[in-house]
Image (cartoon, rainbow, N blue to C red; front, side):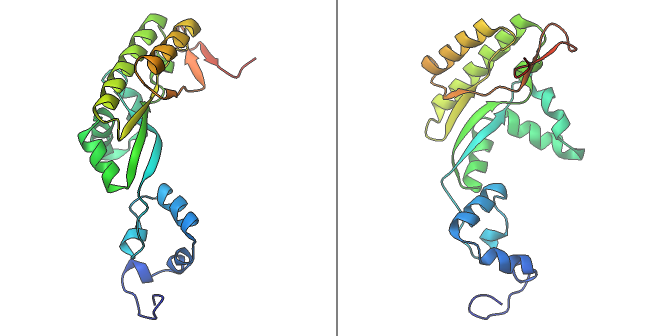
Amino acid sequence: PDREGTPRTGWCGASSLVSRLERLDSIERSILDLWFPGTSFDRCGHEPVTGKIALEEHFALPETLADSTRYASGHSWWLLEQRLLDLHDYRVSEMDAYGIAYAILSLNSPAIQAVEDRSRAIEIARRANDVLAEAVTRRPDRLGGFAALPLQDPEAAAEELTRAVTELGLKGALVNGFSQIATGENVVYYDHP
């Protein structure tokens, strides 16, 4: 039964988990809604959490898209591909559906860090940051961005970070914990002595 003693039908009254969820305070509910947006909390009469900020929301360039195929299973690739390549229409409608007010976008993983050729890594990072900055400029009320950096060349990475923040208006940078340099076997981890 609900708090007034009325028996519930369907999912909302079917589990002791639901009764435990109903006793959560607003902070606990907010945390769960961040992890499981659009779940039964809305369908069971709880007010959805809105105004969320999402970090590390990925996008892809055509040349980095293949890096994400390993994250799709079965027939889900077409949806993941659509989500990664779209920076406005589909993305913003999903943000609206899940109560996300603002998203910080970053290039899909491993992207730049997996590019073995230094000059190509620099080129793709610049292109990714230009594409991202254009998207942010179109919707600054909803989107921000973390720059991609070509850490295969530390000086170029520092220059690109400066350009991305001071000229393009991005919020900072997001990097993976390694870079491949010259060959796929030559992997440099940033925390290695």
